[in-house]
Image 1: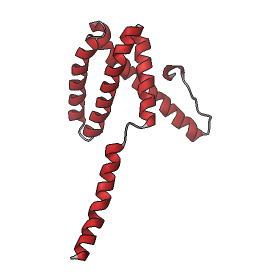
Image 2: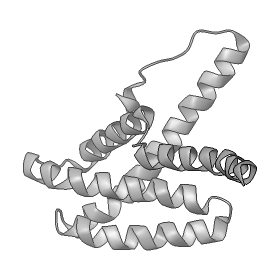
Image 3: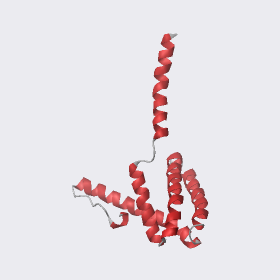
Image 4: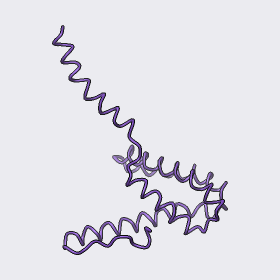
Length: 144
């Protein structure tokens, strides 16, 4: 009886520990930095005034978190991922419309895609430079 109890504890304990760690983890510091830079980039491109920016920030944070969670959940199935992202963007477009006019609400996602594309380009250039032994290009104007 003791052997079974010890064996079951040895099997269950690591799983409980891993689950507890995942539940307590917040977004990674790097993810927060990317979100903040993306948010600033979009606000600048949309020319949001102070009151619009204050209303935009919490909605964008929720959107960014849901986007990241959706991406983590459905990254194995590309078509389902694309559909879930479309659904998410449609839902948040109505929330962005309450903050700003319809044209700028639609542009949020265009600027988000532009930011991602430019960030990926910078990452690729830095990787290539690191492989070639060149110094890294930090603090590009787009991401500042």
